[in-house]
Length: 313
Image 1 (cartoon, rainbow, N blue to C red):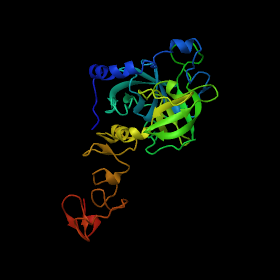
Image 2 (image 1 turned 180 degrees about the vertical axis):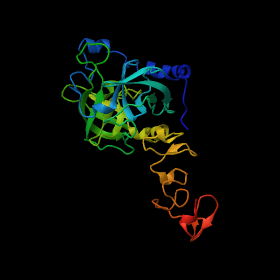
Image 3 (image 1 turned 135 degrees about the vertical axis):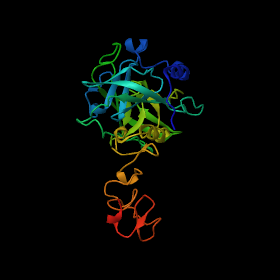
Image 4 (image 1 turned 120 degrees about the horizontal axis):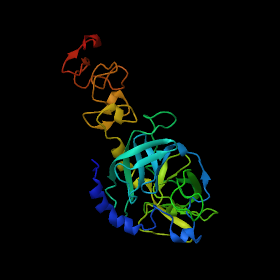
């Protein structure tokens, strides 16, 4: 079970990562201001495809990406705090809890990723309950087209973040290598790991393949190439975080198995005899037949086996 941490504990855990990632995300660096290098979101396309599921984290100067209406994924070294605001277009929410990836300081491959639980939920397409963005569990192929999003500076030299979501488009250079992606700079010299920390890079299906500024090792292969930890490194972990629940209202699926504390895909897995089922999670509209305990009879889910479903309460 992922561990929720306090602000004090988070500060200690993230301090080393923040030093290692001093390029950071809270403000533009001096060399960017002098024009020596570009923030990848500078001159990017404003309000690009996917704008309705990316958020500003002004307290940290970072970008976040909605996983569901209630959860945001961003870079682990962004100093978000409980109580900080979150904005998406004209909507506002507040960070309530932080969950840092347990491999934040893995000596082999640090995973610089954090998930924020927010409240109230942010609506996507007018719906505040069912939004869900996929996180890629397999590997994107070499040569693939990648879209990276963030609330970067509108112009080189500006500090802080823009109110407009911006897009840069790059290509996968060599695909996956030791659980990292190598991305080739575009014609503007924009590269993903110099982007807004926490901004997601997506494949053409809209699935997250990684986050910008998430490779603390700083490995670079060749001029104009950046490196990003593959989402496959943390996809299972993020799924376990966003699928914790105590009631149906906690789940983007709309169904919570409260006894197990996890979101499930339908009432046929919720551990309750409901929705016309003949037994607990069996019979009726559920694919599973109620025969495992009662043979050819109907399992009422309360210890009784009967011949006709109508005899179940």
